[in-house]
Length: 87
Length: 87
DNA sequence: AATGAATATATTAATATTAGCATATACGGA
DNA sequence: TCCGTATATGCTAATATTAATATATTCATT
Image (cartoon, rainbow over all chains, first blue to last red):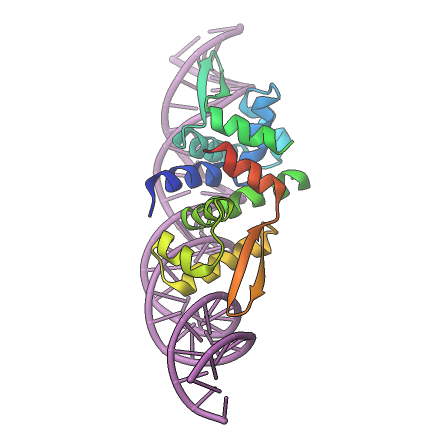
């Protein structure tokens, strides 16, 4: 089983969930903090946090703490391309 | 939960598996029949068939029987774009 | 130091995905 | 019609994902 295929499939899999797609899409649209994502996704905050973790582990996003909040951003170029291709 | 997000996420999820990514990638590269996919993926034929079914249900591929064989092709434009974006 | 807001972690039950095997079906040729 | 090749389907056990709840942490303000 091709390792490159696994890598790419894992990337798609990470974004391939409604909540996570919504998060990445929102981040590309300028949203930043978790509270906004909770509103936008309609799921409880800990659930959002879990999905943020999955995206972080996949190397798709990164968070920067600014005071009380954490500002997330998409750091993966391929992820950006994929989400934007689905506009 | 946004229905458009769910639709797009489902598409990504369908391709977001090593075997299925390999299949779609191979189809875009000119491969067609199941036997080739069995070789390329290294998994047993029934397993390939199951994944073909998942891709078919997701509206990504379509198969045409030609005599003894079935020729598959990618019929989803977004799927093409996504896989090609990951070249 | 106490409080409140923002976010993260742990745990767990429910559910979904996956892989493989056995078997079935479809078709072409003898 | 029987056989072999190509592909599909049914079933099941193992594993992974998901969502929710309870709780913990981090930081700013007072």
